[in-house]
Length: 247
Ligand code: ADP
Ligand code: MG
Image (cartoon, rainbow, N blue to C red; front, side):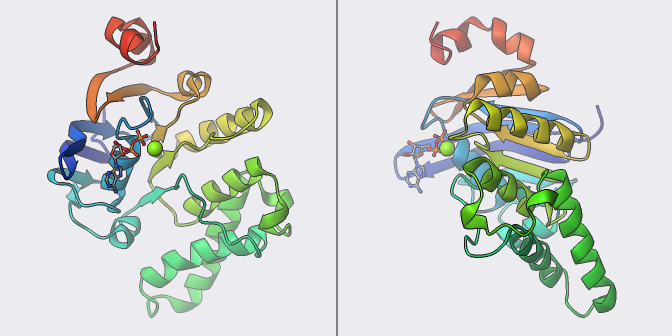
């Protein structure tokens, strides 16, 4: 397999006496979805925060496209090509779908250096926003006010806003949370479309979606990786079935 776009090595995060993430090592590859599953409190969101720079690790390293980004700010890591969604929404509810995506695209342009290619920057920003809208299947909803769209569409909008920053690596924390089956299926299709152009980490509780999408799974319990492998390997793992799938 080609070199990983993102590599976490022996990541640890302690909150006082609690080891929220212990010795987690994982790779994300272009064109692959790496799902991270585990019960509540397993450390999945903390791991996401360590990879995105939202939290500094207690120890361990993060490499993005071969570069050591450990300790970098979230803004700098974002500029280096990592996009993430949050469990809590970042949407500006009074603004339209298009305005939200345009703002997300623009935030990247400002970071990227405002004096550089100023004229081109505008077209690039619009183009990136437009493409993100289309990828997220929201082109038909561009003029809708974000507060008025459905819960599922708001989750799509969050993905569109993440895509608008032009990431190569995508970290998605429970994109299907709170969705009904129709919305969930739509999101699964969306994530499948994003797969070829990104390296993706998918934290998700919906096991149907996880097994429909993932090329690789990592199972966390109490901050530790208890198993990692292909969906078939994880399905067959007696320890996983006992610890997590409740069998
Ligand atoms: P998951 O996303 O798998 O449900 P989290 O990463 O949110 O798990 O949490 C892992 C553990 O770390 C939990 O016990 C949680 O209470 C704890 N935790 C998470 N964030 C903090 C924090 N900022 N301060 C203290 N403890 C935290
Ligand atoms: Mg979480």
